[in-house]
Image (cartoon, rainbow, N blue to C red; front, side, top):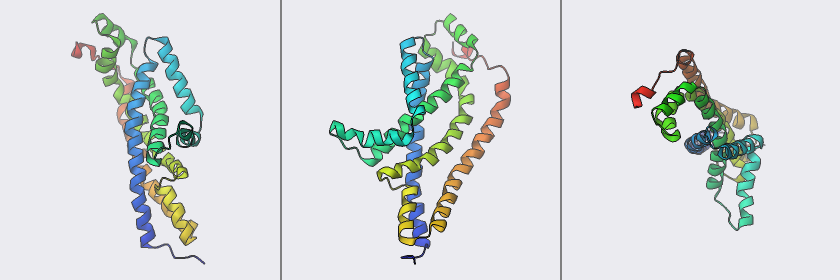
Length: 229
């Protein structure tokens, strides 16, 4: 027999916890996206040691489970005499992890721009960073958007891992509600619907962007060099 039935109060508790899932996903999207842009720039930089450093970073964060990364940052910090807040540990871990994936997404988009754009910029006297900022990235954005929005779906779902260090987001709230109701089908079924409501629109939008930009990608990239010269 359950301690109490799953009702409106429990549903509101789950919905209240959803805001923390959304907030963590947004922090990851912004922080990981900014970091990913830096990683992508280093990946295509002329300096080979910098490229090796970026490759090592990407291989580590893409090649190890995010749960292990979370534990390393949250529990491993105690060896340095510091115990981070659960929010800080979760946000830092997710941003570092997402930065590796975003870095590869952005790198692929940057490298898809014809090399003639780089050569024309060099002929005009542009240095690497100026070429990247004014010529390459503006053209690569249209290639970045669909996979970037698509990866946002993965970010939203992965936030549930943060519950394992005590962050009360949607997944942990579901566990707490199930503890007092003992109605797992109702509780986790509701949580599944909430995750679906968060992720499905993003999936649709990613598909829309892919269809919208597919025609533009098939055509020759517009020569922006002359417009910024």
